[in-house]
Length: 384
Image 1 (tube, one colour):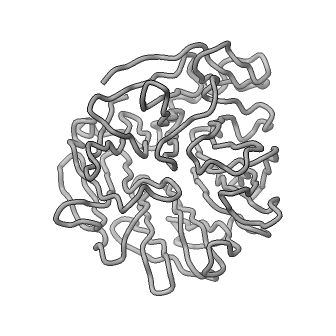
Image 2 (cartoon, rainbow, N blue to C red; image 1 turned 180 degrees about the horizontal axis):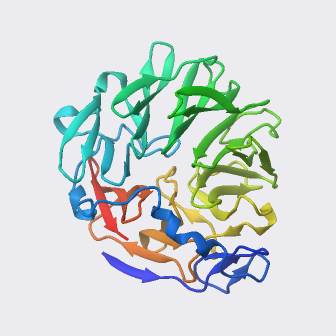
């Protein structure tokens, strides 16, 4: 593994907040004179729960994961982890089954057999969720303190779950078709209540959740009203969970796939006016704060678009740690930006890897799928 760093940083300004990330070229400033706002809460990145000393990168080993014929069509990895809990779709003798592993003890259990094609796991604390096939289509399962529930309500099928320590969000489709209307639902892990949190005309999809907010992609501005790789447009919107207040972050073109971090810090993908969209293989990676205007959002990579090959290799944000894969002229590398910390991007390259997939950012390490051959994918944990 080789390490390198980028050039000057980009910054996000405002009267009380600023953060930096970027690579190469001249520094870019999104406005304002403050320079420490995002950094004030950097310690909160790991405040959701202390890490066990036994759960370091070495505890992952080179565990193989099952990838179906292609990488997930929307970039959801077949694995997730938080602290000492790893959830993954197993390869080998139990191919396709969803497992949970305690990284401190090595204890490994089956959460769901391969028969229902469990996929897209997400975990935060003792809350775990995933997709699986059901009688009417895709379903979302939620496991809290060992008890599993299947989400059901005034919708036909459920997909795209994301978890935080006290809730999960997912996309609820109102019909069987991919272009049918959809809303974002929130399941409260403490009260076990399920309710729509983002509804309206057109599709609302690709949500993320934190203890304070829900962010999602709103396709209501698109003439057709639904996600379409060939030309849909959309905005990022957020909802404050305590008050229900909604903020629309309107901007030209297409912004999608929001990622929520600490203290209102967030990131997302943008295609601006590029149509047709290049199948998630090229995008601008932007970051900002939910309490600041969209005009202050900045490009994390200041030298151009992020490129991935294959497509659908999406970034990951944990606290203030933003990790992403970029395919440059000299090969593929893992890039890291510490939002709120003055400094350049750091890049890491790996010898012997054909491709890198699905970064999942953690407080102590980043988890990747590392392709060793055309049929072999192993989890790779990279210390932070």
